[in-house]
Length: 285
Image 1 (cartoon, rainbow, N blue to C red):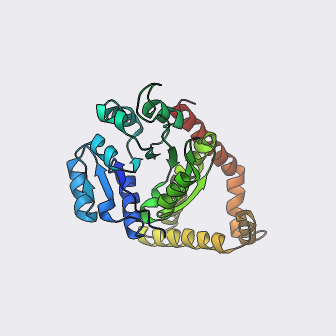
Image 2: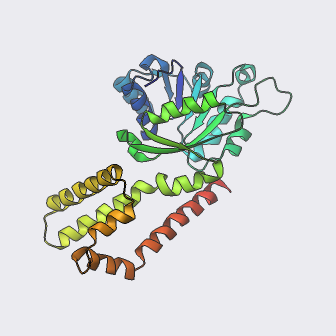
Image 3: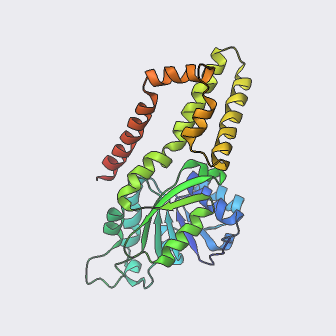
């Protein structure tokens, strides 16, 4: 993959921040000396420095000033105080370059980020920083993530390409309009939990049918793994593949009669729609 040769700063060193750092280094897109981190937890900083040999910033402002790309990997409720620590410092007013800001904080809109980073007219700091909002998911931690991204009007094609390079190091990425980010959150951001719930249900059923837990887990995990591989490699739609397994009068049809009677598909669609609605509520939309 293409090397970035840019200084990347991570404000926040949690699991998702570590996932991105690990992916960048494993793919050799970045070198350890090109990555800088800050976090309130000294234990997390020590862990990442020992594991990846990355640099540690004195504070968030120091990281911001040294970095060409700033990845905001903080909890949504921490975003405002973290950004104000940077923008209210006198040094911020003398920043002359438009650093690329990438936020992975769920529910924090581009409008909110612009309000935090852009200074009132007349201030000598650059007002129109490129901002890209990202919604990753937890499989990114095993380099199988699915991310949605949306850039503001000041994010150039080069900025968007840079963000894609970073995100593709840990999986796949699609670019969408920001108004669709709540749907991305509902489908892929929360999506792994739906699959885990299916696995949980299959394991529970297997145990109820007499299998020991280990056997039930093996049967479930390998079945899901195989079904995913078949979907990826087949030209058939998931619906067609399902129908091929469902012989008239057979065992699978018996199972789907129960699922249909309980409106499982409709309930899943309703549940995902509610997740999108909740994402809009949390982001103030």
